[in-house]
Length: 327
Image (tube, rainbow, N blue to C red; front, side):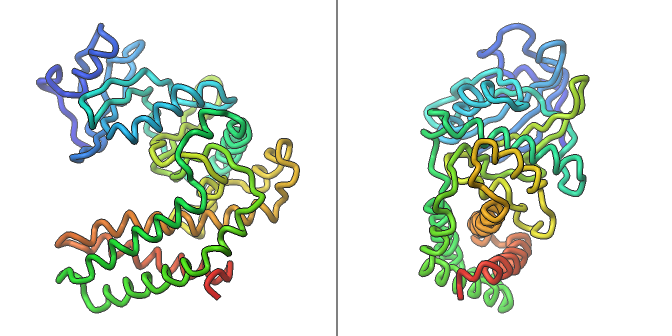
């Protein structure tokens, strides 16, 4: 992790922070957590209340508006732990900055029973308490149609890059199998839609996985703090409950506990219905993962996206075999 210690006042994140909250604006240091052309995340040490760190996130306006709605209008009013949101500043017509409390450095681990319990309680409270919130219902659709679009976009991107000379014969065989699987899934997508019928819709995070969830211990106890809500929206809770792509054998949530809690609001959501959510969510997450990985096929070095594609193909095949969507 790169740490900057000089000329900090001139950094764009610091300038944006000074617009939002004039006062002590020069940090002790700036940690670069992520830095790309279209997005960046920095930790500004020492500029928050009591000398705490502040997370500065630069992102596209469309993405920021989703997160801003969640941090301003939804999370503060739900019975869950949530990061303090300091505010929003606009850089130009395309980009803006979000400023948040630092979640700390300990990430969620589905290998720990305590963390799976925390996740079950947090998600159950979030899903049930947000189900009737108007601001949540206005968020982008994250139902079956959204993931069908992931399927189509991922397949299109793969097809567009099959001529990349960096791809080996084995790579091409993997990609062609994924294309064929996507073709079959699309033809039988009505089966997926049927599995979603009757399941309650609510606010969903959309990318609930270890890198996007932090755990923090305080005097009040141990709390869960999900970050990166840009893929959040309105839909069934499937993707939030399913294991992340690449980790199919590692449950993220204590499903029995989750079920016992949500049935207070959704009495019809028995264990069988929740398992449907997990199965459908597994499909959704892997189609999204294929789409995201497919973007890397346009470049000279394809080892990383192809390593992911091999994993996702195996998991998609296992999920589809279990659910019999392509039979």
